[in-house]
Length: 402
Ligand code: NI
Image (cartoon, rainbow, N blue to C red):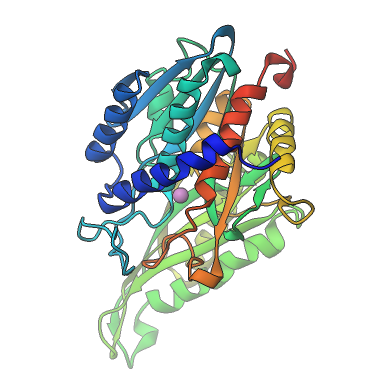
């Protein structure tokens, strides 16, 4: 059964909202115009809501006609510090800020879902809570929203959310139970050597050589230090050292990110925040010792892995299966090392986060997320709304085994 006509008819308006949001993108915790726009719509439709949660977040509540469980739907609202390079009439009017990840689409889908459900309260039991979340890109608005109590009054029983996904073609849905997106850790390491003349290395401790050895050695953690069945990645994204071609550098500084799915790897080990941090520290200390350098490692967790509940995922999977053309439309075992702070919500309540295919190469709509020419096929929006509406219509406590 395809997207219902009432939702298909809504699509033109949803696209207009998305384009408005796209024109006025705002960075994390600065989503003020965005929040005003959302509130204006919710008020216009008579939907009860509370704004200013975790600064710019909004929670809307739509009760169905019959009492029942509470399903939360989450949409993120923030943009990125990127200068848009798309030549479209609705291109960003905020210099250096761009919706380059599709969060404008997520907000428009959630608004479309709210509008439809508010008009069709007889078609679902219980309550639907719409959570408009700030600052997904950084520093993360999900945790502060949880701390502000968005999962209580009434208590949320399950949660769903989606990401428009240009890694998948339009008309597809990607999902899996268990880990969908990776845990995101960050690190910084400063190395202290001893500087000197470029022609007299024996009088120095060369921070360039030491840091290069460290970068190489760190790569062997994934290859040799972890169970090969535990996918992980360690990226040194920055390495700064040296100032002149005839000078041996006295210090170096690097930073990077570590990604993995297995939550066991996030456990504190040897006084460090994770299994991988402990191995990094051992390698960095060892390499430094062998040259007489010293180092300091800082390591912290940003987002945990996005772990989907098997039962809620079953519900979304069967809804998606009835909507997309199988077998190609449903992409099972979809997984990425990208991170998402939806993970904090999924640590609190069972839920399912999924990818909504949005690439259309024939129209040039297949640039990767976070690219200055990122854009997606807007006909994905109606499918997103249809899936969320069906989740509201389908969800009951049996889905979560209660
Ligand atoms: Ni995103």
